[in-house]
Length: 364
Picture 1 (cartoon, rainbow, N blue to C red):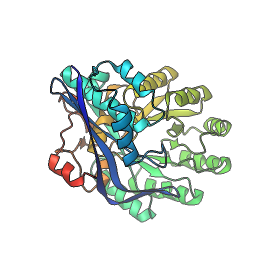
Picture 2: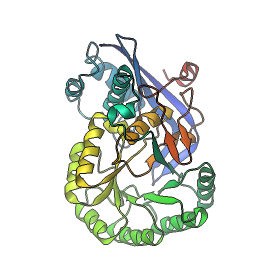
Picture 3: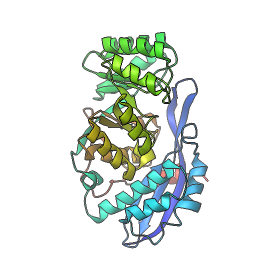
Picture 4: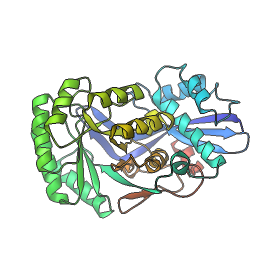
């Protein structure tokens, strides 16, 4: 089997309402580049590349350019199973993690379809369903409570909150959400590196009292000694995300002994690198979650299959972002029941794109 050609289609789907986090974070649409890898045997692998200009420096159109002009030409004629050769080709282009990750996952879709198994079984086959979390948008507390209560009625049992800008408001937020949702619901906070040491220590103390599951990136990731001091002072673990972009960074974090959870984002490390991260985490006794970068249903499926493949992915994964979008490219949305994403036995990723919707939301 050989790769015949690869399609790249930029798209933009409006959100139900803008999503905010931190001082400058704002997302008004779900943007991405749909990738379709066509093979000589008629198998088509699909995934989406998600731009993050404020994190990785890529945009919708820089993604398409790097895919079309630099990464894809070296893939045509290659065997999709030659993973090491393909990543050797990727290594000739610096950075661009989202583009490489999407191509990698589309190729795994091809390989799993060729083997007639779902991707989660091809990767590891741990379980067909995974616990999920939902990120509550940053807004006035009453509105956050209403949003979380609505999702709780749909069966969601774990919620991610955004903070890091105002200590008093953040403590009020976790106190208010805990009171509104009850003790049985799991809560955790992404501080987006916003606290200094003093505020972080005070916030972690409040988190212990409110039974918060973890705090994601409480202080700047380069402040290793500060992160280590926080970790040693509290029973609430630090979740690493911005500190874990690459395998090299994860190795440094493991050696630092500050993080207790690693947030793996397959949309930036694909399956090839993500497998190495999850194995490193297992060896270090660190559990993992699978995070989202504002994925549509397509990115949700790619992340969900990885989360289901490994026992080390124990923390509820962020597989519900598509609920925030007005529409989706899939003919059928991911199935989430009673707080769990349930994966089908369809070979590959089970991605079925509605071509009419793709035409509607296509850009350029």
